[in-house]
Image 1 (cartoon, rainbow, N blue to C red):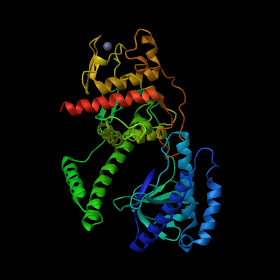
Image 2 (cartoon, rainbow, N blue to C red; image 1 turned 45 degrees about the vertical axis):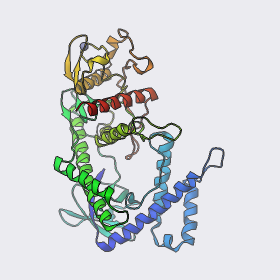
Image 3 (cartoon, rainbow, N blue to C red; image 1 turned 180 degrees about the vertical axis):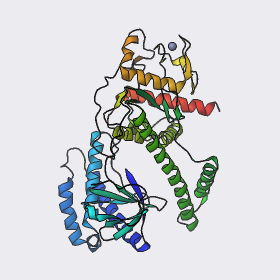
Image 4 (cartoon, rainbow, N blue to C red; image 1 turned 135 degrees about the vertical axis):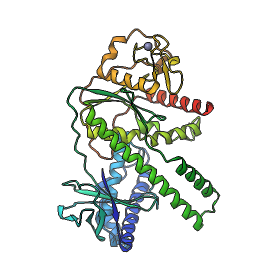
Length: 436
Ligand SMILES: [Zn+2]
């Protein structure tokens, strides 16, 4: 996604905020409509019907009528897409949008003349009812982009993003392959023994953040002090998020350039980071560890990492079954829970091979992707029933290419693998907490 920093004037900010309010209002109406639906009832209105209702609502409400029809209709379009994602099982159910948190709108039908360059570092984009808004020309604007999204983050920064799938990066064409193990302590370990960590806030920044968060809990709700603290926290968090985003871009481009085939574990990140608290009927266990882990997974950018790789190295990604990659010896192939001595250390109980635990996992992923794991199959006994399943070799065929830029991990893994991975990660977190 090519994202640019917008530089609106304060008058333009007011109009854009109104666009955001309209988009949010329409979205939340759609959420409410669909919230009333129960099995057995007539289907809640689909996009076309909602658009008809929207034009009725615009006729009745002067407030809606003053806004941009494109903005409001696209909010419905966004909603129907996220509903489709929800039914596909790749995303959660679309929920309420909150003021100050989800501020943004989409403009479609963009013509080439709607974007122009003013100088080396400045460009302008035409937004309906707002006019020409300046933005930092920080990189080339993609040609032929037909739509863009304008967002305002919690730190109050406005961004412009053109929807387009980036051009694939050319691989070295030397048949090289790499296995990547995504983790929490090390965000991505490669079978070449490289350990890549998503950047975090510096120690000083992190201290400041926790100090601000403590102060926030003590502040009175609705006070000016609280608003100020929130803005402060949002700025720090936005900084951290920017760094992580940059890191994903750099690492994925680098991998796509250096290797012809990239093997990843087939993880359903959305399902893995599902709310720790669970439902009232089935409350979660280890809630605080699990929610800490969710945050760590999100900060390690597992989803974005895979998504960008799929786009940059289209057709060169192999997804492998994540079962047992961390307990199997990449040298002799024996699966033994005891071989993983600690979070960081792997020492095979059978052949004595030692390595960084994440690198060992990455080597396994690479091997499984190459289909070499067949050789050691059958020699092993599963350790703990269905959970300790032997990983199946995955044929290095054509993986699917994502149709949607915003798409989360497209493939779903079976529930037991997910449960197994989550459990082993929780074990890890608990171990880390009890052994400082
Ligand atoms: Zn071994």
